[in-house]
Every structure is written in C-alpha cells, then in structure tokens.
Image (cartoon, rainbow, N blue to C red; front, side, top):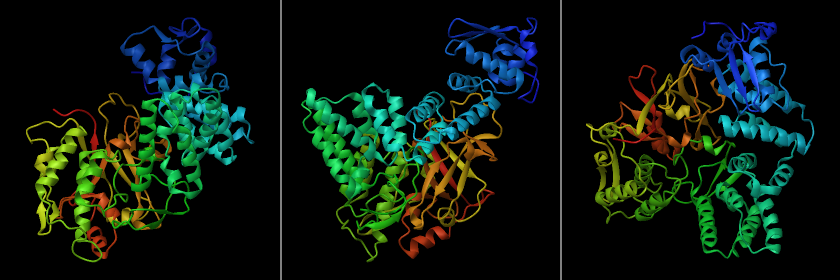
Length: 561
C-alpha cells in the first residue's frame, strides 16, 4: 500500500520527462502508450496502488480510453490540477477518475460539469444535448444520477423539457434502453410530453406502413407512469388517443400487450401507485380512507425509484376479504411476503377501527385457514422466500371472524430456527431518540449501518450504510420514506452509500420491545384516522441505547438455504 500522502499534490510535471521515474506503461484505445510513475499514480489511485504493489503489474490496459484522455489523467496526478479537461475528453477523464477511484479528480470532474451546466444560459438544443448525453453516460456506466439531476434541472429551468423531448425522440426507435431510461427520468411526472410525441409519430408512421410498434415505443410506454393521465382530466383525452392509436395493431401479441398496458395503467390509477402526482398542488385520489372516499392531499415530487415500497397510504381497506387477497396475489405493487402480511393485518385491524364501530364487513364465514392458505399460495406463486426465524417471536392478533381476534401464526411463513437465512438481512436503525409519530410528521432521517455482501473492498471514510429520509406532508399521515442515493446526502454523516443498495429490496418496520405486538407495520402508522390510532403510535418510543424499540429494515440480498 502506498504511504499516506495527501493528494492532490504538485509532484512536478517535469518528472514526466524522466525515463528513470516512468516505470508504468498505460495502453490506450488507439494503440498509444503513456508512461508514468507507478508511485505517483499509486498515491492518487488505490486501484493502481493494488495493481502495482500487490499484483506487481508493470503495464495497465486502458483500452477504452483515448490517449489524450489518459495523458490528461496522468498530468492531473503529477500536477494536482485538472486544467487539461475539455468537452472532447471530459467523458473519458471522468470515467477514468471513477474507475481508478481518484476521489479528488472525481470531484474536479463534477465541478467541471457544474461549470458547463451553469454556462448554458438559453434553450440551445446542441448545448442541452451535450449535457444530457454526458449525464446519461455517467448514469449508465457509473450508476449515479448526480449529473443527470443537474442536466434535468437545467432543462427545466429553461422551460425546455417539452421541446427537448420532442427533438430527442425524433429517432426514438434508434435509442438504446439506457438512453430511454434517461428520457423517462427527464419526463418524470410530465409523462404527457412523451406520450404526445409518440402519438404524433405513430400517426405519421401508420400512414406509410402497416401498424407495427417499434420496441423502443413499447419500452417507453411500459415504463412511463401512464396512470397519471388517468388521474387528471386534462390528460384523459391524450390517454384515450394513445390507446386509439394502439388498438389497430394487427399482431396478436401486440394486441395482448396493449390490453395489458391499459389494465396496468388503469389499475395504478384506481389503487394508487405509491408515486406522487404531477405537481405539488392539491389533488384528489380515490380509495384513500379505507372506506373508499376521496381525500385531498398535498404531495411533494420525489423520484419513485428511491421510495421504500409499502402500503403506507394506498391500500383500499373497504374491500372484502376474498377481493383483498386476490388483489394482493396479483398486484405488481406487492413486492414481498412481508408486505402482503402487513396488508392483511392492516385490513383486519381497520375493520375494528371503522368510524361506525364494530365490523364494516361481514366476516362470519371466514377463518384463519383461508388466510394462511391464500398467503401460502401467494408465497409459492410469486416465489417469495420465507422470512427469517426472528419473526416467529412476534405476537400479532388478526381479526378474521365475527368472534374477534386470533393469534397470527408466523411459523408457517418463516424458516426453521435451525436453517440459515441468507436471503434476508435484518438491519437496525442507529442514533434516534423520539416517538415514531413525531419522526414521520416532519423532515427526519433514519441511519443504518450495513455493508452489502457484494461490496468486498471499501476505502471510503466512515462506515458502509444508508440513510432513509421522511418526505413529510402537510397532512401528517401522508409521509413517505425514500432512500438517499446522492453523495450530498451523506456529507458529514457517519455512513457512506454504495450503489448496490436498492430501495425496492427494503421493507421497513417498527420493532417494539415493550409493546405486546412486538412487530408493527409502518402502514398502520400511515392510517392515523382516529385518536385511538394516534395514541397507539404516540405511546411508542425509539431509544438510542437499544433498550426499547427500533426501526428495522428487512433487506433482501440473496438466496436462502
């Protein structure tokens, strides 16, 4: 390992001309060779340090990078500056800095991109295209959205989103799926811009050829939030126009795909997709109160991909039992066995908390066997793994019949204590003191220590982990939780983030060590509709010393044995 030397440092460019210093050959894409000092590069790059010190390599293949970019990289290592970066080689230099983990140069590249972004003062498609393409390359290859967020913010600040998307999608059929992903990110909740552009192109396309849809069109429509147009009257005509264009597709598979797309979009509109609506104005959503009435909600726009999936607010609790179980078994929004169990419990609890008192749905013909059989069928058909043995210790009461509550038997859905669970990891929150009711009614954060098994080598300061932030609402029950994925979220924090972590693999719950139930789904906290429920959560407490209770994340990482 190279001695601790604080970089960037000016080692002197004149050393580059000395053959006795330059003992490491860097092979570039165009057959070029760049010679450099292995010591100086090792001071800057832990990757090159490992290659030269541990593996004793005397040459490094950098065949995907141009000689000009490698020259600038070496100059930067020697001089401690990034003066040689320009638009032509920025992409290569930025990727080299990331691949070889030169932290200070990564920051310099980020600063350069910010300067480029700030230099764009008007709606020039050429300038915005450069920013968008470079940001898209970073998003695809380095798995970070920081540059893409900057590019999107610039396009939005110039009020150029619609014009840019129309121009960028002129040759949509030639775009890779990764580029289409950036289109979806840019569109965000303005999905109507994408749909309008595709409808216009289909109209022209079908005039000169038999109706057939390019793969790229299908990908955009499959991955765009079409349900947003169903929820707003001003977009419904466009939604109908889209499916009018698709209804004449002659191929059976395309017809089947069209029907499935329509079903999926309308289902999300009816049940709620767990995503915020197009703006932060007050909007109306059906099925929000447990008895199907409409509630007005104020929402803050946050990227769906960072939301922790759950039925915090979006489960229609006025369904009958069979209807509810059928919905859980089929809905794409139910992502895990624990999420399905949470929904069953919340649904049954809601019955006893109905405003009129007593049961709002007749349950006299239902029994626990029905519940268990249906959940077991779901577990098998959806290929959900069994839960860790720890869940068997929790005490739950589920209302499944007119006679009152019965104990929920976790053992049917958990691994035996003698079995090793490598599919899931249970992660405790750290350093929070307060009541859950207070935490989720304001901007708060929960911090977790966790090193993903795929992270085998980490030299970053602090511990591996992640932060979940509350996205509050003026209406207290309507909070959301999102996974923080950007570097700025972890500034001066005890943990750092690795991109291997995914929000969709997380299920957060409350482990109450002094409460009879032990396990409480956060969905129940979301449904604060009576003083009784408010009191339930107001009496619970999170303690730093671990004596009382904790927020926990059940994280799916691999396969169980």
